[in-house]
Image (cartoon, rainbow, N blue to C red; front, top):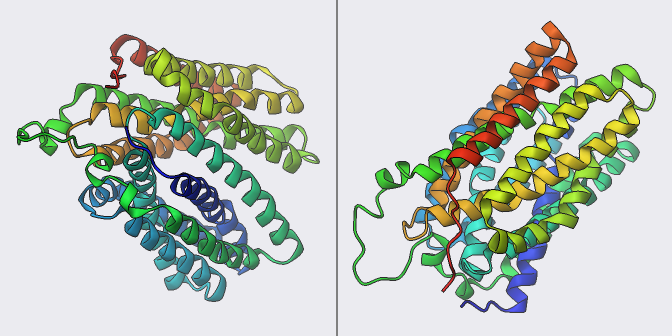
Length: 401
């Protein structure tokens, strides 16, 4: 049983916390900043689309890079340094070629960071402790997101929107320092790639083709696609509804709708990680999908803007479950293959496809039939995901010897 040092475990805590801070500096802040720089909405949309496409295409190559790496820590460090430089480029030189290059590099770097975190975690603690450790990871990521949103929102309001990217660049420094606190010699490279030790491994058993035919992996990837197809459009759609019903308080209500799920994730994720081994994976997946379906139904029927904030508790439940379950189930189904991180890339691609289609489909339904119909449709997609897991997804929990 691996026994990583307290220094490495604390280093992983703070690495994830500061990394969440760094990543929060992008997203909505980009659109606000570029608007102040006299960019048109078409130009902003093009830049965001380029980043989204690179992020989608890069998921599987990013995972394969981590599987091939001899040092996950080094790859993660290079990715963080790249993101810091991208943030500085946004702040110093916001012209179209530079911003497009920064958006492309940021998306590419992000594609390796998710697999790198999961690989470092698995390499440090092993399969037996991974569920609980992933819950702790999700807690620190949630806390980092919340703190960063508050700090950067304050800087953007009191100083300038440009300051958000300068803060993001500076935050890359403590992120790298925290990463370097994780001791390289405590990260088992074979374990981090999902490999096992044995004298003679079957080439067929560890081939990529065998991985791509793993039925549990394909079913789970399909479930994740349905999850994001149902989930990605809910908050933007609800934000539009809140703005229509209570325009004066809309910014405060929308901020609360973001903070509430983060708080739930911070509270619940460690318990999800602990219960994943005792309950199994499938019951928790079913809870996550059920919470998403209930959220869609409530959004369709609740009219009070303030009650909609409470509905976001269900978003926190879903987020807490899948923050832990995605890397944990991928680790289950790829055990012994050596392709843990490539499989994460496959699931990440399913995530990107579902999220991309979600906003387009929900927007069309909302414009044609109304927002209630759109929410009911999203709830229906979540229900299909629930049935897929219930009927087809096998339990992937393994006994830990």
